[in-house]
Length: 551
Image (cartoon, rainbow, N blue to C red; front, side, top):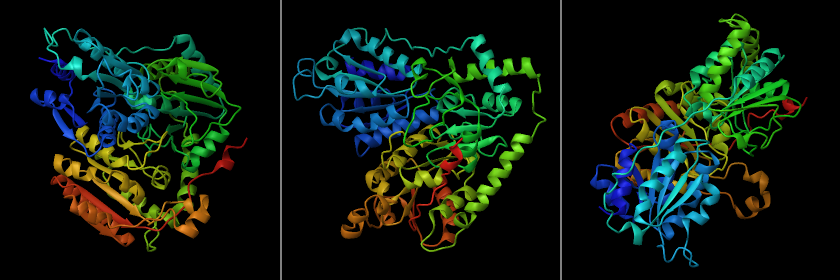
């Protein structure tokens, strides 16, 4: 048994069943020999994005693992790992190394040095005796603290050696959860209960902690409305009377209103990172911040009460404290806040109804989102957006009603992420309908991974809105667009998908969108990969109400 065999045994012990990869890596053969399925992607980034989607959908219980070769493999993987770092996704990356006698010699690429800034932990296997120890350290980091990617560099001159005893010294690490002090919880709950217009801000940590029910109970008990972050969309059901929606840089009108009006703000399971792809919390609020990582507190906002601990354990303590103050039923009979939310939502949807129900040709992208909402079975689907306008059009209006039913992403926004992300999601949830909503430019970045899905028998659906241009760039670079057509592109994307072995559906009219999605659902059930291309118009009107944030 050599070093690669030992790593494979460690992965098996941790419950790894499949491994996205890109050759050449001896680990591919090693995992295959013990029953871990390797799936070769068309590029490194695609494999990493698939591992990312798998980890997200597993809620931190199982982890995506990606392997690549040394040199160009580890160099090409940087963007995918950076995306996982930006969105706090726990994945294990196992690249080849230049060798213990070469990795510190320029221009050889050192994964441990170059990936240190975008991983939780960057390790190197420098001798056979350290293999099981380094793998245990890696999985410990994946299971504990703020989620994020981990890299373990495997040097060929070490890994090719025989390892006496193999992986017999490997033992699994455990997830270690903590909770904040009861006195801090008491202060936080007291502040929320005495506030005139409190609001809860639920982050991705609620999903990773499997704390949706606890969040729902606390919200209902106290009648405090809930905003979810983009990464946490689906952590609280969008159809709940106390749901305000998700805070991308576009959001339902209720999100903007409550962020502006609230006097007390409580984030739960969120890093509270200020990003271009979110809404900044206005000044002047009493700030409560619950997070698994103490370093997040006071990072971007001045926090009045910090609660360090697992989101589920924290919410359980908050529920107990609230019941101690306002009784077992709390404020459940008071529907004033829910009624106000309902009125704001109705007004907002009426405002957007002309676009959501538009029959214009080319098809309006908001009509596409509306049709998706009407046709998909929300309880048994996993949906995601892609970068750019599709994200900003989808996020406010899609109703995510069950945990992990939507993957929100985008602190860094890599075009084309949606296709491999859904491949990973489908591997985690083979029984669910998995669909990404993307623009034509995004399809060009990762379209070849449609062939990966076909070859690997992973039936996903990609819905492309093709408006023949880069949405919104006619405003940001008007001369380049008008004089040189710099942001325009064209192509038969359904035809490309068909050539790659997928079922391809072209849609030219709004009335055809719903039936196309229904056809895709049936085809996916029969094992077919589907690409739907809808000819759309550009629409740069967005659900943004920044004036409501002003005091």
